[in-house]
Length: 553
Image 1 (cartoon, helix red, strand yellow):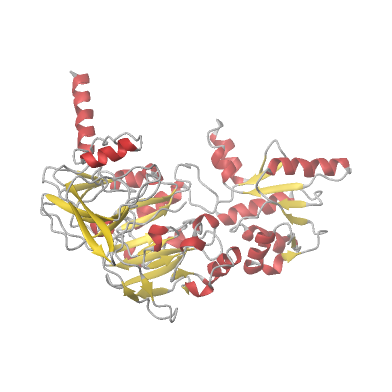
Image 2: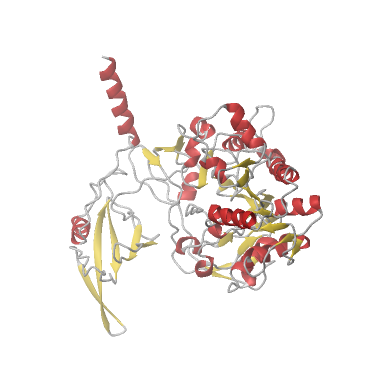
């Protein structure tokens, strides 16, 4: 699943949740369902996507309104007006599936490349603006601040064949089995239609796709490659389901042919998943190289071809060496960016001060002494807004207008600590969960999210008064009792309790000493142990050095 972007950014990419819904602008890289999960519940205007992605999404979610989408095509740039400053977005081919793009964002927040799901190639990377590409080992004229990178195969060390090479392997496999009267192609995923198109063109035959049994795939193919489809089951080439129970259904097809004294059908699965799962098997380099250069038959009778829509580790390393970004964040699966040599070398040990643009992305206040070291861990803070966002939908082609929203601001601390960022990074916040300058709007039970509301008028002292209004009774029948003063006011003839909670900000970041007794009681009332803080990076490093010195002595 894609990750939430830092709350300091005015846009979201491929996420549909209460947090991302609070963003002012929304971007969709492609139409795969893991990138559109929640779009029915949490979608709002505008959603920037290619026209083909829009059509594919509307096929999967017919309840959506087409007017939510704003078109942006490959190579096209859009300048978006935003209260925090206008920014430019450019779409580039992601080499993943029909309509898939990468987004390059350029604005006050920095220069950010979000790849979505991608298969990076030299041609694709060099389509990015020249100023971001290093030449002859020299730094690029303009450095990318952040790359949100598809690291699906970040641990896969083998060299993946190109899409063109994989398609040729499928064709060669069919040529080598002329006796197979039926060829089943497990190409039911969006992004594998190039295989079907190449087979249809090479052998001069259309592909049978049962519209009733494979409604979703059939509709997608009618948008991408309608000319190759047929409803005639006598065609030699049939589309076959990859999942579930591929091997059981393959065995059944082979058994049926044997029972009817017919030639064994040819079942081909173009996918990199089988190769990634089998990587741990021991075999010689020549055997492994052979497996990646031609189709391989498994014991179940299925022929595998390594066809990948995601970049291998080698391709990711090559692209990062060419782009030389300051920070790299893995989008899916999480934290795999740390597996990459580029990140270990250029990002892990780098110190970051608060003048860096990262702080605008995190969009939080930090109070710390000059001796305090703050470790940034994950760039996925929840979005925080003060008022509902109302966006004008008069015209999709006109700049987006925000009619009502209080802007979030970053108040620089009086003393600036250094920060260490690890690829997908996160700034530690006080364990109490109550940032000093935030007004708590509501607190529900432990299974729900605490809704925060920033108060720009709160004065920053050693202790900050945070007003809690209308505290809801939790489902565990526990009450949060504030031990400080209670004010009772009259609103519309009703008595409303206002409770004031003192929150100390004297403890350093990452410490649990600033837990109030009230919060401790709340944890205990819900039979939840009071969280213990993780050790800071400096403590871990000092501990490691001390152990090493004792061992050497």
